Amino acid sequence: MNKQLQHKISNTDQNGVSVIQSQPHSALNPAGAAGLQQVPQLVPVSPGGGGKATPPSKMKKASMDKDSDEYRQRRERNNLAVKKSRMRSKQKAQDTQQRVNELKEENERLEAKIKLLSKELSVLKDLFLEHAHNLADNVQPPASGGGPGDLCNNNNNNNSSSNSSQ
Amino acid sequence: MNKQLQHKISNTDQNGVSVIQSQPHSALNPAGAAGLQQVPQLVPVSPGGGGKATPPSKMKKASMDKDSDEYRQRRERNNLAVKKSRMRSKQKAQDTQQRVNELKEENERLEAKIKLLSKELSVLKDLFLEHAHNLADNVQPPASGGGPGDLCNNNNNNNSSSNSSQ
DNA sequence: CTCTATTGCGCAATCA
DNA sequence: GTGATTGCGCAATAGA
Image (cartoon, rainbow over all chains, first blue to last red; front, side, top):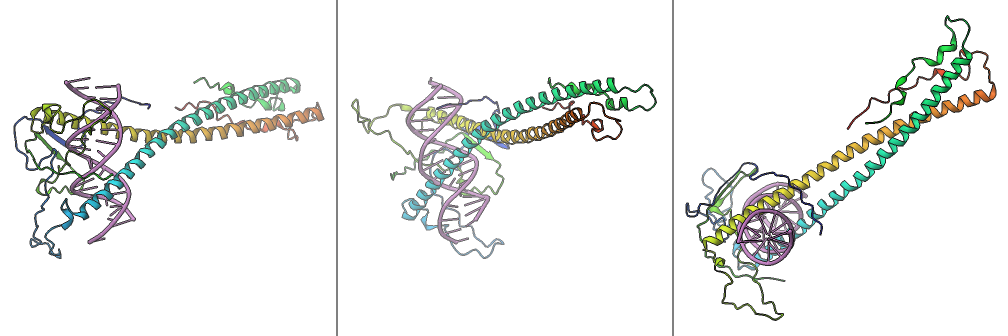
């Protein structure tokens, strides 16, 4: 049971939701928002007003009755589906979290590797420079002109160390 | 497993809450069917293991009355808390997902960098080998211009360094 | 249109 | 006792 609680104050209210709340005795709501069941006798919307082709079904479904067998059956199925869906959702979240961990781990590995490679590279470059200097010293031609002696030095890249001290 | 609940429609329409939620889609609220709720769904069964059984005709608290002001108030608060909690949860999941994306991206970057460094390293190593061969073969090359062991032609890729991301 | 999947919401139990 | 979580059921809806 680990619990990661992060307080991210998102504050109340979200998108365009207006919550007018809690007036002890005030307006009377047409439909109980809280807790009650009401028989949804939908208004038999008469298709007449411009509508059309709506079959003359007065009620949406006869199965809307709670007592109906049909209704119970449907409810049960939906409940099952809901359960399944939520389970899946939860699992997914969990997996995602785990993925974060894995990625983090791999990231560290990669960074370590980079560090190592950088170091190796740095060493090799230094060696290289050293050799170049040696050569330059030995092969140094007597005459200046366009002597090849200086060739290796091209632009002496002092940046070589490049040292990754971020 | 099947719970058959008896509905009691003692709807008290005195809820002090009005939730106007802007729904992305057609917010059809026929006859105020929006806030339907189910009924008392679970009753604390008798604990069985000794102690007092719960008398069916007794209430633990007077606040249990749905009509109670106290009750409604508590419910309202809880509803808010629930909403908040869920919102937070959702947000967290979202953040986590985003984190995955970011990490993946960074991972790619790191791998690319590794590849590059590896290549550089490889090149340098080759050069070294070549040079070593040259030395072994002839300590004094006749001329440095265009010779086979022209180690200097390397354009040392000094692109590295100066790369400090993150 | 039927059926499942997803989503928002309220309730109640439980945690902290 | 209060807010925060969580499991669950309902209903509306999106999706197939």
